[in-house]
Length: 239
Image (tube, rainbow, N blue to C red):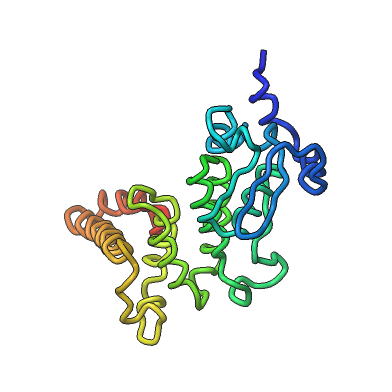
């Protein structure tokens, strides 16, 4: 038999979205930067480890029904709450226009970090895939891509490779364009954390891949070509 938490976690967005829009029967208030969000424990708690713990009766927030998120960005909190109710959120990207002509996808980075902070793994995965698609669909060439990289490496811990791997791999894949003279990365070293060391490691791995191909062909042209045929052809496949 399903527990109440399990049952609530599987509630369809079609049923919960009207509750978010109206605030009807709200039993929990989340405030952030002057914004007030009237929410429902039965919706937010099953999907967030933080809200479940805050409302279990052992903390003042659960008793008072008021939770203040004073360190967070209101727009990001709004996106987080939207996801808890609808399993989706709006960002600054409009799908009908080209990637390069739009704002950079900072929202995905911020949603990713807030999902980690408040224990919402599904939202973390959702924002990661949205970010990956933006980067690979041309976001790597956006004029604000260096700022995105800097935010990724400053907002996530060294142990979290989710977004870091995406920007590092895309940088190495487009290394010639992004490292050329006049690039916004040119001469930039401060504030990027472990980005440059990580990129160096990926480039070294790529060099080793090419070296293995060459050695295989030189040592035995017949067997070597067969070996090369089975090696990954792009950096994306290799990493």
